[in-house]
Image (cartoon, rainbow, N blue to C red):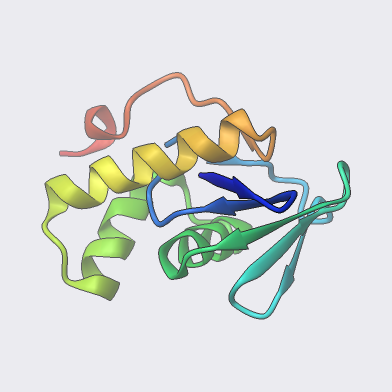
Length: 108
């Protein structure tokens, strides 16, 4: 996550779970999302956009690494790490609810 000129940029790295209040996040194209509670705009990486859109469509966070693996062809360990980092960033911004377990524990 980078702050520049009053704008927060979330990189393609993930961690917890996005708020289920679908009215909280409003997407503008594939690059920006508005937090309707705080009024802040966030610039998203393609992977962050993919994960947030999947969450908004009902996908659960243990499924996110598989989504990144399929979409970008990255190895499963990197996908888990990236999703955890992204979700941690989103949680710290107040856009997600914290999850009690790590993503690896939910994988078989």
